[in-house]
Image 1: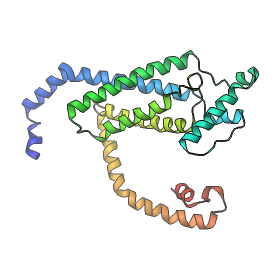
Image 2: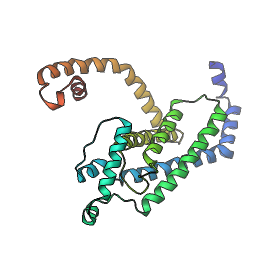
Image 3: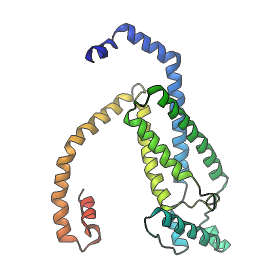
Image 4: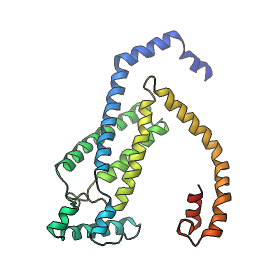
Length: 244
C-alpha cells in the first residue's frame, strides 16, 4: 500500500491529476461548493429570521407538553389554533403568518435540497458506498434541515410556527451544515491546510477525552452531593454538564 501511495507522487501522476483538475475537476467542485454554500446561506437566513416557538406558546399561555413527538405535534397544532383565535391587535404584536419571503425561501431551499439529493445519488454510483465521514455528515445535515423546513399540509403551510422538535432538530442541522462546509474548504488552496490541522487536533483530543471524563466526574458527583437542592445540580446529569 505504501508503494502505491508513493506512485502518486511521480511527476507523471502529478501532471495527470493537475490536467484532470483543470479540465473538469475544478468546475465540478466549484459547482458543488457554490450550490451547498447557497443552500447554507439561505437556510441560515430562513432559520434566524424565524421566531422562537416559546414566544408563540407564551402569547396564548400554552404549556410545552412532553417530549413525545406525536403529542408534541398535537400540542403545537393547538397553539396554532389559539393563535388564529386572537384579536387583530394581538396578531400585529406577534404575527405568526408567513409572508412572501418565507414562501420564496421555502421553494428555493426545496429545489436546492433535491439538487443535493441528486448529487448524493451520483456519488453513491461513483464511489460505490465507500465514503468518508464528511459525506454522511452532509447527508444527515440535509435530512435535519428538511425536517425543519417541511410543513404539515393540514395546518402548517401558512404559519411560521415551528414545533419544538422541528426547532431543536433545525438548530442541530444548522450546526452540522456549517461544520460540513469545512469539508469543502478542505480542498481550497491556502485554506485547506488549516482544516487538516483542525482534524489532527480533534483526533488528538479524542485520545485525551477519557482523561477529561474522569476529571469531570471527580467534580460532578461531589457537587451533586453538596448542591443537589439547587437547580443547576438537581440531578447527576445536570451536575455533570455543569461541571463539564
